Image 1: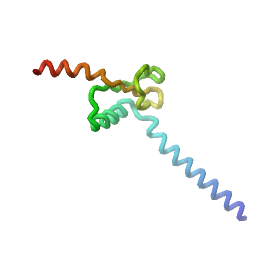
Image 2 (image 1 turned 90 degrees about the horizontal axis):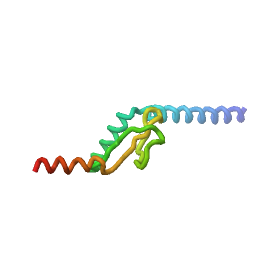
Image 3 (image 1 turned 135 degrees about the vertical axis):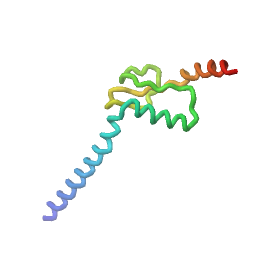
Image 4 (image 1 turned 90 degrees about the vertical axis):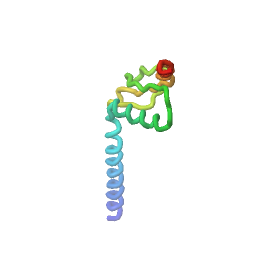
Length: 97
């Protein structure tokens, strides 16, 4: 009797833990690229980072860019490049002077 009680308790704990893991992973795995881009841009802007680009690209075609996230169910990567947007900023500031 005691063996059955222990076995049932272990089975219940394992099942409950597995169910929680699936629920925690599923919503983040299906995040759209636009939502992820906005979320990461907000964090970078809050840290004062300027002169960067975030572009969704097909998985495996990131090139030299740093991958900062995946989106659209893992089919795309969000590629981070530093300095690409900074080149256009000085030209804009020269016009205003």
